[in-house]
Length: 350
Image (cartoon, rainbow, N blue to C red; front, side):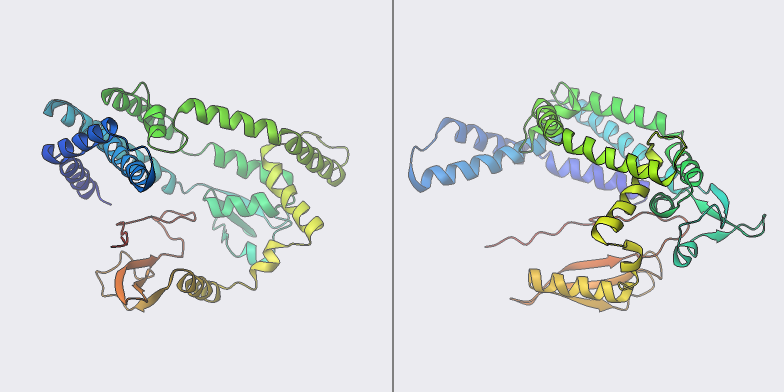
């Protein structure tokens, strides 16, 4: 979304949700529910459901600045949120703009299948070499299948150190989030974000992660020992340390050896058209909907390769929305697997 459109959306969103009459109505309902609680029966269940819904709505108002007492505070909050959105978009653009790559010979890419090697462009400066970019699909392929450790090391380190300019961007975002949360009356951003979800507090998150770590540490250590032994057997007499660029490769080998699962071989049976058709049919059966492939006009999509579907409910037959598939990498496009809600639609039961 372009900056002008994003600014207009954010300002409209804050404006709509900051309507004083609407907010005061939610606030009054919240106070009424807090002061009068039924004791038994259906009234109690309804009260509980209403209280949860109104509390979530009140919290949502708070998260967009509606609870701020003065217009100056709302404008300050809006400016901070706009800056955060601009910085987040800039960070993604920086990653997408990375065109760096590393040139390797076929020997250095040992372990890669012929189909996997086709993804890499030929090096125009050096004969019989190809260029591995720092885009996530290339990095993942090297991490999983390149048997030469030095190749994996070079790609992994280069990938981890790309976009150093994003460090300052992230620092500014962290500070703005903290300042924004404090403007709304929270001690920090984490407290604001966890209040509206089931876990409730940052401390509860830390406690949950601590318990999870304690429960999984023994198995994690055991798995690491297995992978380290695999590396020692694969490269006897070499460095016995296990690095970040080793994990995905030996984990893939272990899956192939122990479970007889070769992901690259399985992929041959899942061509794009066959897989996409199967996924659409599965979701049609699961949700009782229909996907209708459209032939879009020139200005209906952002690129000629984008596929557009209309989505319909079966019973009753009603239009729900549009679904887009942008499936192939290209310059200027987010290069990894992702999905985004461009405009959310909810079907509400009467």
